[in-house]
Image 1 (cartoon, rainbow, N blue to C red):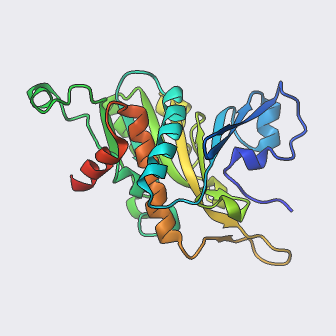
Image 2: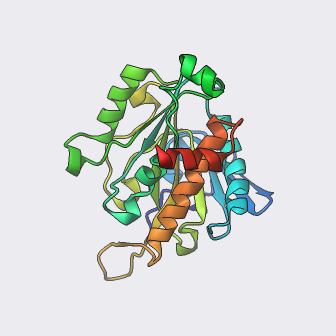
Length: 275
């Protein structure tokens, strides 16, 4: 039975193509298992249903409020994210999704915890000792039903004004296996098509649309529960509120680890909460 998934590691499970089309590697680092998938050719794209690019899937233990574990995982994920970004320049962080629908609130919840720094400069930055902050802008474009505009239209307009060197897009994902919910972080450098995992495709946010590299990151919050004889459905766990809160904190810390390596990610999350 076919299932819907945003995760390249799931989509490539039964792929029988060679390494010239799809390259897969697995690495264990501490308590994380990193699955690296590279889709290299149009044939590879057709086989896994994903555009060409790099996909990194971090499988981690169940998320808790343990700050030491969060910091360790954020440092490792942030290192992978930093390797996908240009070394300098303004970065735009985009939180996709609907904050009023809990399983879809991961993007906005993460954006709320990312410290915007693009406006901090000049004498104020020097006086506060913040001259080494990388310029970061944060936007939550909402969803079409709320705003009447596609997320890609809003983000493209912001890009035209602030000229970022790259865009990080955060969104909730769909998985094919329940055990991946809240325990998997995916990064990819091919952008994202919002809603594709749940059959509600919107216009993509990628390099072709925005004109700069687009790094997508997310955590699965819903799973395909397709059953024979039943209408397709996506389901989410009872503890989804806790999963979103912890997942958003991990992703925000990972973004800070990548963009602001001179500062403790947890400290920047706390500052963002208070702004």
